[in-house]
Figure (spheres, rainbow, N blue to C red):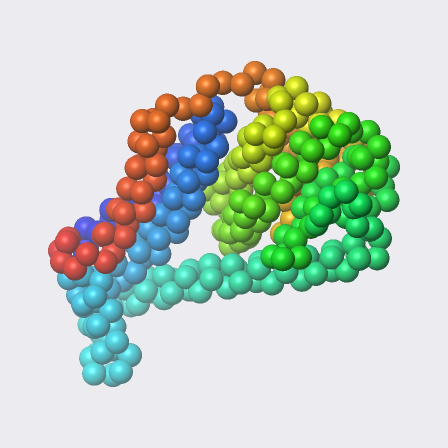
Length: 323
């Protein structure tokens, strides 16, 4: 288990800096956003597991040859059937750090969920006061606002797509269909769960490059996935026009979809510099489409994602694999 802790520590460092930086600069994710999303999730999960696992396995090394033996020995110490001196102060510190990090990650995940649900509830109450149901489209409400705004508010059976009347006045019927399909794709593909997980990851470890780059990448990828879904219903020029019109709104002071807790969608109403870059990249992808990755390349990347998760799991839980 001594060597396992060093392997896990090395993997944690690799997944915390060079890998996310390299992936964030790669061009291929735009060609296969689903595959890229799988890889980002794997990097985040494997990185967290490696960080905790490295501290835990190193801390338990004096009292067990593998994780099971180490945890059994730790239980004996907690039950006072074995002296804590068998661990040593430094190893006790490592175990405590692993436990504290685990608790911190779980607590932040739950706290983020609570904040999202609370914010979503307040926003839904506001919509009930200010919006009116769409006559033509089910599960859609319209808010009185001159700027083109569109986003979705998740909530299970109460999920709704929100449009502004300013948007509906500008778009043609086919362009409006593209926007609606895009927003409903966010709901049907449960993108809000991904946003929740990566927002919690960043809130828990804001100094970690993985958490910062991953959240930005996931925000981009879900828009690509929703655009791809919209292209199944409308032609490319129609979607491009719709995206460009929605993205043309500036400085209205309306709340953007990115700032709505737990919501997702396209509401560009006075976004900052990063929003403009993201919109430009999104339009560029639609204007100059590149062929998707070949099947064997996607399979290879997904296999690498599985391997990333398998390595720390095996090092942690395979009894007696590394002594």
